[in-house]
Length: 247
Image (cartoon, rainbow, N blue to C red; front, side, top):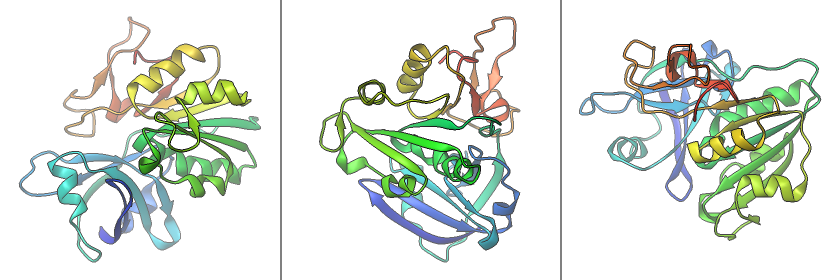
């Protein structure tokens, strides 16, 4: 794919827009791609697909610079070509006859929820979005999500929006919903699973991946039903039912 833009949109957080035929193959919000960042790095890096524009053959991802791979990725410029494998994994299902949903994103985990918000809005579903960040410097995509519904921001240090975590915000604001979709840190997903275990929902789980196609079992996770074999996040997920896996 060809890099259209690669810009820093918050502290150490970048939005990368790519163009190529692969964008037309994406079927569900929540799928991901594996990028070969450099010949010096043996393993590809997985990134959730944030937005898709099939008419322009473009897709976007969000990433945070945390190691050697993402540091190299941040140095790439518009016009550069990049080796992309995908789309991979199973995304968020769109459920019929649901009028109101809650999207809960934490940190860079907000990425796959944006394309989901777009798709839900097209189906005339009322979308409430709660996004949690460490601080104001890390807040991304607030105005983008506002195009599709009400948006609430929580920061742990209170530097922007609600002071606290996403669950405290949901409970304080008394946000109503019939279905929940979420992606973010495991601690956040586990807390949501425990708090809303009687509500139907779906979570996108982040794991370190090697092959991206389920062959190596490097990204396995345990199902709550211990009679079942371990799930492969890259192949059986990354999206699972809220109470399907042990987080």
